Length: 291
Image (cartoon, rainbow, N blue to C red; front, side):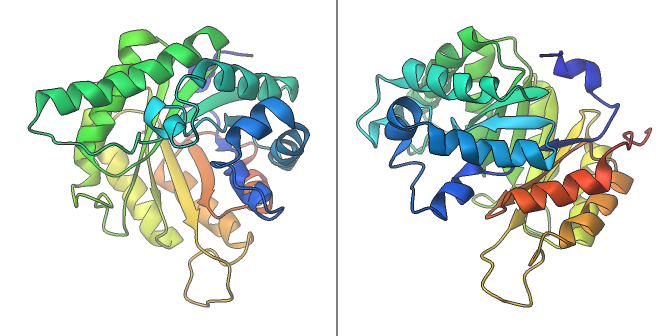
């Protein structure tokens, strides 16, 4: 696999959508059935991952969001992190994508920002996940789904203790650019990302394309990091007020994000590979705009 850092601030890249959405349509719960999918019956997972690759995504995400010990403990697998990470990585590698990102989400433990013990406990969760990923040779770690700056900092510090692999970091924000759980501003999160060694900074939002583009412009003004913008697709239940009711909406949205200065784009939330394909169609061949 090529060094992904060589592409920073160069060409537009599309990141694969959450594979659990394809599996959910087949009645499979990715979190509950993680061990079974990774170790016993991987064929369904491989087929689901392949759909995003066929859609044209240059960056395929390893579904290791639950790799921290606390998350694995929920399925009685706290000591299985290395085995799960290796199995899932091998599945993705067999598909031969251009780049492999390993996703890690919040550990889910209560966090007291005033407690040194609590902060250390959180950092240790991410350091353990980093130890499980470090031998694999992934292109980047994708720290995703964070809604508090303090926890994001713990994740960045925990991974930096163990790995020198590029870190992509993303926070969930509303249309005003405030973090979902803490009301902290996007700029504060981006500052933390830059200060703690992230290689790419980003956000996920369900806001309409124009608002997402405005957030991208704010992000570009706040940091020199390459930017990832994730557009969160809501439940496709026929609601006319949802921002991304069909994959076609991604074409216009991607144009807005490119014009605003994003490099990495992703359809998240309840997106399917069709959304990925729309993003690919919109940005393939485009270069990141100069600052």
